[in-house]
Length: 100
Image 1 (cartoon, rainbow, N blue to C red):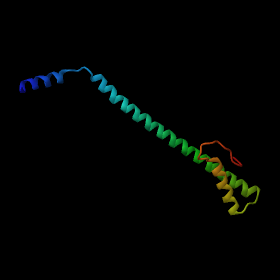
Image 2 (cartoon, one colour):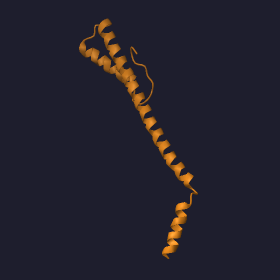
Image 3 (cartoon, one colour):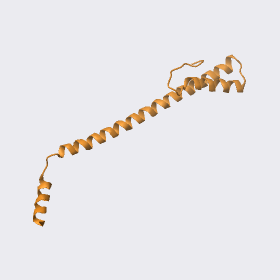
Image 4 (cartoon, helix red, strand yellow):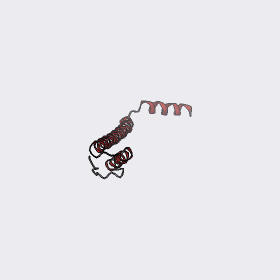
């Protein structure tokens, strides 16, 4: 009985059929992992760029409001918040804000 088990284990150890399938499965898993990481970084970079553009538009509109319209500090802050919210639309719709 023990001799039969040893011979089966020896035969199993030497058998190489199907080894490509296992390597392919590991490669596919790694490929999917790296694709997921790349998508996460791309989405994070896009969100960062969108926030930066919205902040720039808000700052420029606030400066323009201060200089040309002689707005008070509270009105300037309110204008900057309005322009930021119009430019950084969370729902994904593309809108253009005032002074953008």
